[in-house]
Length: 264
Length: 166
Image (cartoon, rainbow over all chains, first blue to last red; front, side, top):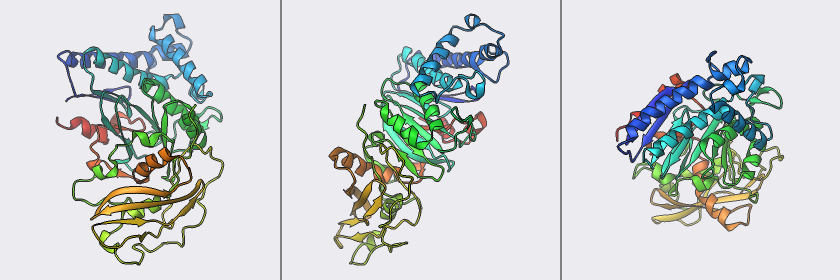
């Protein structure tokens, strides 16, 4: 297994490759370069990034990095798909981060695939794209650090979680302009081919919707499943989510001979 | 568009209590766990305004479930929980124990008639209704969660995985 962790974009990107090829270490080096380049162009924390300058009107769209118009077009698509709950202008300021991080994960996956690897997992700060498999992905419990709310398993999964656990109530409901607080976390599992960029942006939008609307909305997206953890710790999920659970159930989470124990 | 179905609506407390059964107490006719708050026949809380497309797991502690053994003694036995009325309808689960090990969890009463949903959710209930799972034995490859900062990463399960050998 080849592993690499790259601090970038204010978080850490983790790469694990089960079938590294001779070109894979070089691909990982180029991924790191690519991620830092994406950060330099799109970071809203850097006053000199293309996005910051575009937002201040100091840079024309045509003079931006060619990835900028592509990303902004994708943001508009997602806004339409989510009834406006996703926006590239949260709080009125140009900030396409809700798309950029997932897209950066897809870029990393693309470079790994080009190196010949087929069995890999890219985790961008908690949003995960896998190739091949099966892979087992834990969903962090929003209220209990170090614990999981669920374990998902499968191949070619895209799993994204939005929540308040790490950065507080930071996702705005664009309808009210106030922080969304109806959910502790919202996890989306993308349909094969959906990709983590869209899955991640949708998770952000669905979080802003609150539990009832988010689950109803997710249920309408073909192949997409959702797991919601509410502020009181209770869970709700879409009808197909159990299809992503490990087939053998909770028994294989325990060492042999130990009795399953309850949470209380 | 997929047909909207009710996924599951068993209360977590019922399942959790079932999972915590002490097998040696499962013999005889007395309830193995005494009910904490009555018959469990009260309606589950909820706004009633939900879409009906989703499952719900009310984790309110103390929700009643007074499982009683349906067969006594022996290495393999089944234990049933109370029927609990949820916002989606009545739900009852039954576990099969082989020694101290749970081999099967069946939903014996379920608010939908769809057979496949019933099978799927029989597997899902004990998993999703666990309030929190120790990552220690979960054999996971990566962790999805709210975006952590570089500092938060240091304390994260993901960083432990990245440091793992092999």
